[in-house]
Length: 263
Image (cartoon, rainbow, N blue to C red):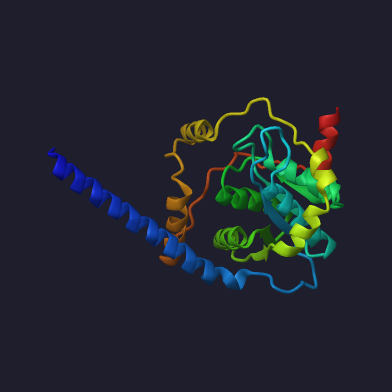
């Protein structure tokens, strides 16, 4: 291929990719606005049966990142405000050898949330899996009134996913100013908290390949491709896609996990 033709081809590919990315971003913004009706904007008279708290990575030594701190603080504040009867903390050891669900649970317990009110979902690698796996826990418990607690973008996006599988959801968008004020006052706590490492940690790409092989499915596409596809399927009235999930969904609270770890 002549150099001029190669440049034109790469230029065309660049423009095409840029248009696709712009379309995805635009669709995401539009759908985020569409999901605004799911947001819980006023205190509820009766607490939700369970609120799902998606995780994010720890630091390399197992200490909590600002992201984990903020989500744990927000969950603790919802408990104090009697907005949730139970929590499901969700997230595997995704980017570091520390289980995100456990890191969240440890921080929430340290701030006063009873450990027996926190259920662990330690398998999810992505937001759609946070939601789907947590829903399976809720269904086993017979809980129907479910919410998502996170920053506004993720809370609304995850709630939109949950509504596709469960028909309803309440998005508890983070009160950022209140959370930051509380977080800044808890520096001694953050310095003392460390998550426990897993012994069989694998990089996320290796785990995704292995689970696809076991399930005899194609590997999960990137989120920027998958999530707009999920929106499109819903708009067309098609059944929602089912994420990768473990064969069994054990029910274990942070209280039970802590006891087992001490044995």
